[in-house]
Each structure stands twice: as C-alpha cells, then as structure tokens.
Length: 194
Image (cartoon, rainbow, N blue to C red):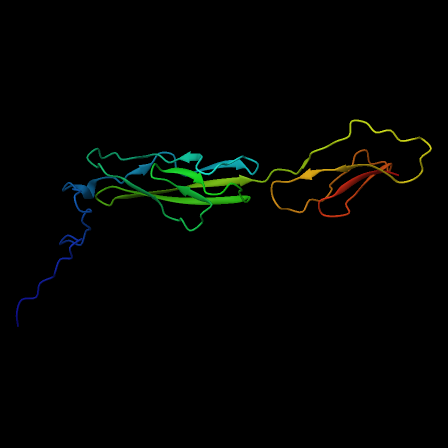
C-alpha cells in the first residue's frame, strides 16, 4: 500500500485556514490580528413617514476601521438585502429605494472583512414613524341665524394621511351637542350644527 497524503485545496492552507483572495497578502501573524469593525453601528435612526425622500438621497453612512494598519482592503456588504426598502451603495451609504415608505422598523445587517477574512458585524435599525392625520382646512367663521332649527352643514373637512390607514374621528370640542361631525364615507367628514 502506498503513502496517503492530504490534498490541499487551492483556497485553503495546509492547516485548513482560509487563504486571502488572489493578490492580497496576510502577514504570518494574521491569527493575532483583530477584526475590522464599524464605528457607528448598533444604532437606530428614525424618520417621519412624511419626510420627502428622493431616490438616492443618503439617510445614513456606515463607517469602518481596522486597528491593523497593514490590512489594506476592507470589504463591506449589507448581508440581509432581501428587503429592498433600503439599499447600501459602494460607499456604505444607506439610501431609500422607494419614494414612499411603509411605517415600521427595518433592521439592516452589515459585515466587514479584511484581506485575512477577519470579520466584524453590526446592524442599523431604520425606523419609519407614523404621523397623525392632518386636517387641511378649517373655518375661521361661519354665520347661522339664531332661529335656525334645521341640521345645517357648515363645512366639509379635508383630512389627509401619508399612510393608507382608515381614519376615525376621535373627539369633538366643544362637546355640548351643538356641533356634530358625520363621516358618510371613509374619507369624508362633515361638520353640522344641530
């Protein structure tokens, strides 16, 4: 029977540690090297859903560093790119990929590797906060005769909301029964004197 030897894979060393990508060198003490890291990860940034967002505007920029000054090539990537609400460009800037946001929290996970494949990871949570609906028009004054006993429409309210939520009237003030608000449809509200 002949000698049996372990065949070395092209991208692995004899001790089974990974080799750096072609053209990049690791020093012999790469095992004692520290991993690169993010200086501003592990945080949350929040925006209102009414923020005007044009595609390509930078919302946040990731910063990386490495204590090993001989590590010259750092590779950064967003590792959970399945949700395409936010994207990361080659300069590690977080951008919106849509002009309209849905309310919620989006966790973006990042990885940075040096040429020796030492790795650091972090996350950034992007929060999109819901804003209250807004009444766009109000009456400064409206005259009704004192002897009017009929239900009379004073005005129609225009209410807008950035999200496609159904809005319901919460409270009316003064609440003495003189004024009422009717909601004939999901989007219409009418103020009456009774």
